[in-house]
Length: 102
Image 1 (cartoon, rainbow, N blue to C red):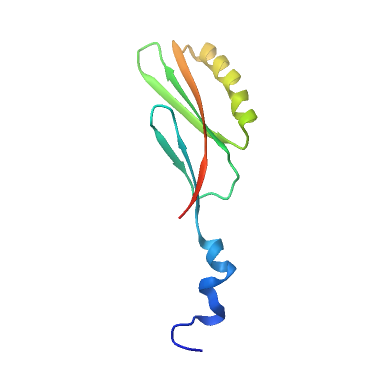
Image 2 (image 1 turned 135 degrees about the horizontal axis):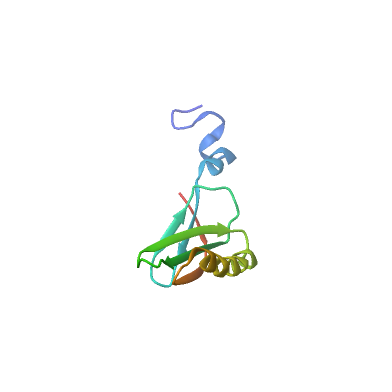
């Protein structure tokens, strides 16, 4: 084996691919970018709720789902939360996640 070779050709083998980290990125309509990771989970969508409280302050809630349908179901839950928590208004947004490796 020469000096430039590694044992068992590790640079080109499956070990190299397994060590790459997978990141998921969402870009919302207002330009906000959220990166999740590293993760092995197959999330497809990011959701965010911006809630305005009675005192004028804001709270932000966010998460990720494995399907667009799952994210859409959370919109109903957000409306229920608004009524229970006394939010004066809220914005519910969904963005598709894109995958990158680092």
